[in-house]
Amino acid sequence: MNQPNASRTRQAGAPLATESLPLVCLSHLRWRFVFQRPQHLMTRFARDRAVYFFEEPVRDGDVPRLITDQDPSGVTVVTPQIPASVSGTDVDRLLETLLAGLIDDIGAGGYVLWFQTPMAMSFAGALAPTAAIYDCMDDLASFAFAPPGIAQHEADLLASADAVFTGGRSLFEARRDRHPNVHYCPSSVDVAHFSAARQQPAEPDDLRPVPRPRIGFAGVIDERMDLGLIAALAQQRPDWHIVLVGPVAKIDPASIPNAANVHWLGPKAYAELPAYLAHWDVAMLPFAHNDATRFISPTKTPEYLAAGLPVVSTSIRDVVTPYGDLGLVHIADTPAAFVEAIDDLLQGDPDTRRAAADDFLSTQSWDRTWQFMRDQVNAAVARARRNDSPDGGTPLAAHGAVTNEDGLL
Image 1: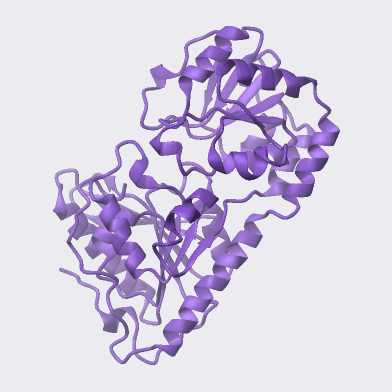
Image 2: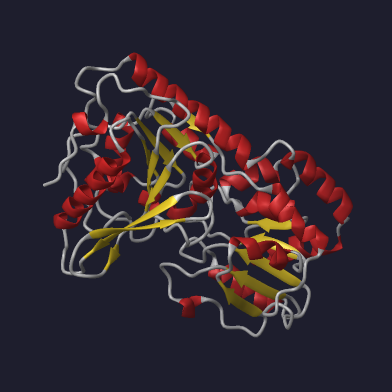
């Protein structure tokens, strides 16, 4: 087996430039699925270092291999290809070998290992990076079809990581006592990108036939959505038209309410989103209250506000605080309350609402979030430099205690 060791991952005495160490991101999300937190952060890290985005494997072919593709942002997207005939712990062993080969190609000058999923510990735990970072963007153990062993893998990762970031305040509060170096790094917004919606770009062709008023949602449609709430809105206000933009995941598309005033337009590229938001009347966050939404911090909230839209949401904790508390988002949980909130927003003063939202958003940006994270990564690398040991470091964790039966997540 191609097993990484200390001499290959970092040679004793090798220079560790804090701004230039390569970063290897181990992700459960595909690079081209939805442009969200990992993509925002990795494209920025690629400004000053080589970035490798090691995404979930595809099951194809007869020979395990890595497929690499250079994204225009500078990120190298690395897709492991695993034969469909391989299963169980053999998947982890192949991923371990392929990842070790990637580390070999990077060289022996050190690297940062960035975890987007704890499940990567099943094949990366034997590595000895210069610094290990855990970006806890979601409580993945609470999601539908979460792989077995994810809680144990997260415990191992929390015991091994040099720094931990959380994507929301509720996640920060849940993880702050489990690691000595946890930082609240909320997902932010590219204000310039979404504020383009206020310039009234051309209406997309598939949106044009939808009557107004339009109540819109943009994002992944999965087990976190309250489809019953959407159905009730459609039934109670047949003169309103509900627009859903985004891919469907982990649920049957047939479960989307089948009504004349519900329009699922499918997934759209990140670059297209402002044109859709520009031609909505109200944006919504119709999330259910379940295990999968207990710790979510929806990135769509500031994006809707940057686009100039009024917003109504169910009482998701990280939406209530700060957005609901500041009066930037209307909070409603029942169909009747949702209808009342939308009615109020359709009749409200858009200039006053936008001014308040803009004042709040002036302190938010992905650049600011990334710069803080970069400083923490550099600090972790600097600590490694001060504590450099002759053997080049210790593997992250004992490998193989828990296996990942289904790939990354």
